View 1 (cartoon, one colour):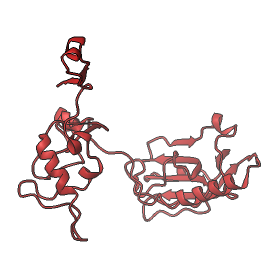
View 2 (cartoon, one colour):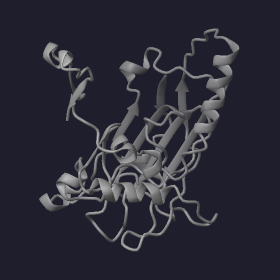
View 3 (cartoon, helix red, strand yellow):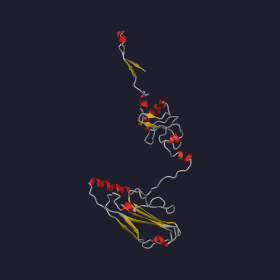
View 4 (spheres, one colour):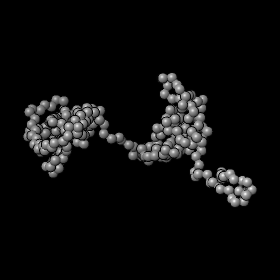
Length: 269
C-alpha cells in the first residue's frame, strides 16, 4: 500500500485541523476516541481488525509544523502485511476543522497491490463473516483507562486485589461485609475466611429452590441471600467433610496379635 495527499489542503489555513484516511474492509464508523486531544469522534485505531491502512495529519496552528503518520509505514507497506477475506475495500476520509471551515475537492491517491490466494470454502465463509461482524462493534470504542499516579490509587489496580487492598473480589457472600467473601485458589482449596461449619451451611442454603425472580438461595439471617455459585464450586471438604492431607496409615497385625486372635487391620487416626 502507498498513499499520497494530492490536495495538500492542510497548508492553506492556520486553524486547528486534521484528517484521518482509511483503507478498510468495511465502512469506517466514528468512535468515542479523541484525536490530538482536540477533535471528538475520531476514527478507529490503526490496530482495529477492520483497518488495512491508516494515514493521519494534524495541524494545531499556523506556526506549528504539520504532523503526519501512516500505518503500516512505507517500509512495511511495501510487502504483504494483512490477510483478509472480504472481496472489497472502502476508502474513507474524515476531516476535522472549525465549524466555519470549508474544503474544496480534497484529493487522496492510494496504490494497493493485492495477492489473491485460494482457500477452502469453510475458511473463506468463516473469515468473511467474522470481518463483517467485527466491523459492527466499533461504535462505542474507548481506548485505555486513566489511573491516578499515587500509591493509594495504584494499589487498587494491582492483582491480587484482596492483597493490595483494592477492588473487592467478584465472589461475595454479602456486599456490605468485607470479610464475607470466597476466594478459590484452585479446584481443591479455598481461602480460609470462613469455618467449615459455616461453609456447609452456605452450601445447604445454596441448594434450596427459590422463586423465579430471586437470584440466590435461601435467605440467611446473618449473611442474607446465598449465591448459587457456592453450590457449583463446592469443595470436597465442604460437601463431605475435612480432607486429610495424607491417606490414613494402615497397620497390619503382628504375628503376636494373630496368635492372640486379633486379625483385624488397625488404622492409625
